Amino acid sequence: MLDKLSLRPLAWLFTTHTIKMNAFDSAFLQEEKRVAKYKKKRARELKHDQFRDTTMKVFERIGDRLEGRGRTILYAIGGVIVLGLLVWAFTAWRHKKNEEAERALGRAIEIQQAEVSASPAQPGQPASELTFPTESARAQRAVEEFQKVAAKYPSYNEISRYFIATNLLTVDRNKGLSELEALSKSSDPKVAALSKFALAQARESDEQLDAAVTLYNELARQTNSPIPPDTINLRLAAIYERQGKKKEAADLLFQIIEAARKAKGADGKPAPQSAAARDAAQKLQRLDPERYAQLPPEPAPAGLPF
Image (cartoon, one colour):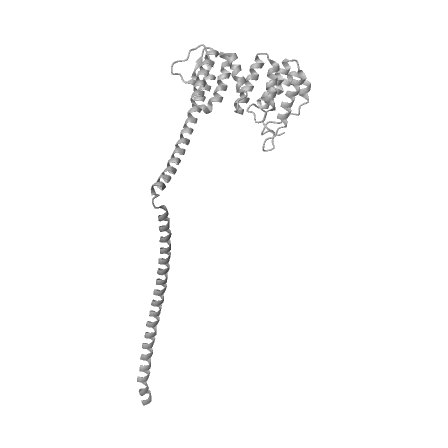
């Protein structure tokens, strides 16, 4: 019993000492951690300062190089901005001018296609409702409108000249023919083809059939022409028939119809028959029934069983 009692103070002292040592160790460890964190933070700060110093030196060197050039740089930036604004303004202006030109050209075409009637047009009447007492009066008014378009909108000059020439065939035929002759050599392929076709039609109506055949054949050999080949061949067939060349006319008509009946669409189905092909079929049936009978059968209309 005595031994146990005598040992209690020692145990208490040992326990107390252990607690104190643990507290000391814990505080020591906390201090070490704090010091370690401080060192890491300081290292980062030193590294950051080094990066900042390096960066500032670079900017200082750039600043030294650009010193005295601030006004020049501002002028350069301003020039780029002004150039961009000019490009934008020019694009918007050109788009607006194109729209104006198309509207003006459309109005002139409406006049060219206006009705010829003995009833006079009322003042302020829209162009689409205009009427003219004679074809000459209508053609003259159309010439004047197309001349305005050609003068005001240079990009539409060539096509306007074409329309002027076709209307001049009614007002001043020789001048119209001369204009079409010149335009048939235009650098604009579309205008050149349209002018040559109009010239060929004029030669045909003037009974200059050989000259018309030459022009039609030239058009038929062209690629990417705005005039459909079937339309050209129909005119050639009509001239051959007038010249008594029945076989040549029948051959052309047969080719038009055969190609149309064998044509396939993108889906592999028979392509719709064009107006030219239907017209050619009627003419061949009248001109040469035996040759017409040699044609492949006409495809069934779309949506119907074969």
